[in-house]
Length: 159
Image (tube, rainbow, N blue to C red; front, side):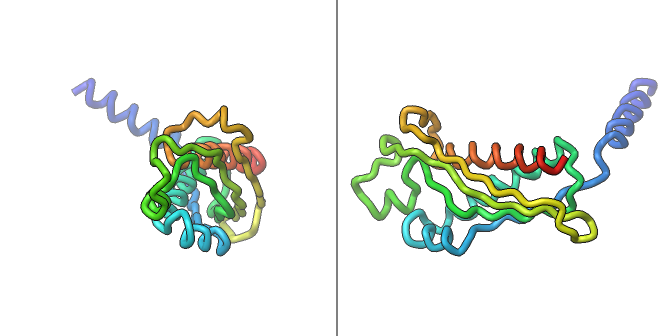
């Protein structure tokens, strides 16, 4: 019984220490990038990228305690490190594992407070400059790295 009371007290203390705010992240792609997805990369990649960006921004903003109610982020461009499923399907010469290129992404973001007032904007891009540095085995490894840097720097700008 005593152990249960201690456990309940500990859990209650942790819940009270948790931040009382929750950030909402809305991610999308620009019209130009949507066209690139439709013509070459494959439309299913849009969800893969926006889901990843949403998770990364949410995690970083909550960890750093950014006091923003809503974040709107847009992927303006992204380049994969490996061919996407649509590319390997439409171009038989591409090998999903052995074809490698430099990747990265360009994003924009706007943060709003609880009243809907804009509290900050941030534009960021990072593309791997050298094929020798491409170490990711994931199709979007460099784009994900760019998302991490974007989220970190945007959060720092707002704190």
